[in-house]
Length: 138
Image 1 (cartoon, rainbow, N blue to C red):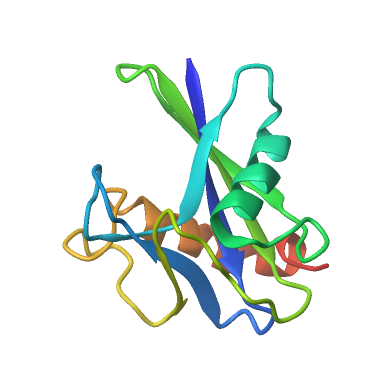
Image 2 (tube, rainbow, N blue to C red):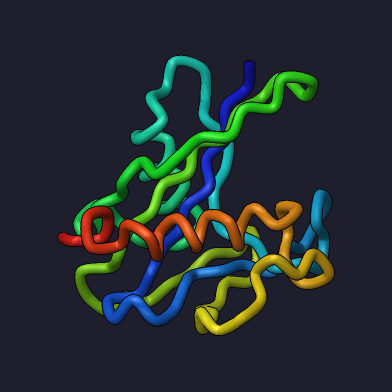
């Protein structure tokens, strides 16, 4: 079963979430969270930090990632590990895989005409809200 990760990266003030505008399918043109593939033999947390660095330039010195939840898709033979974290300081983000930007949290993340993931982004944000004191302390 192939593994992937999705990374919910909040700014230090917890009022913005790092998003990307997808440049290719799936979800071309829609906003999404950053993340990627878990390689064979790689732990989920190692893959999360590796993808974060590759896609954004954010290092493990900038953030502590917390394993929030998993999604398992039996028919597609894959699973997704979701990690969340709050930046410890302001950082410069850079990446060339997708267009990166900071989104305010007052959006309708369940709107599938704007956001990838069939509403899952909205669900994940609500989960962080319910447990942010526990999850996103540095």
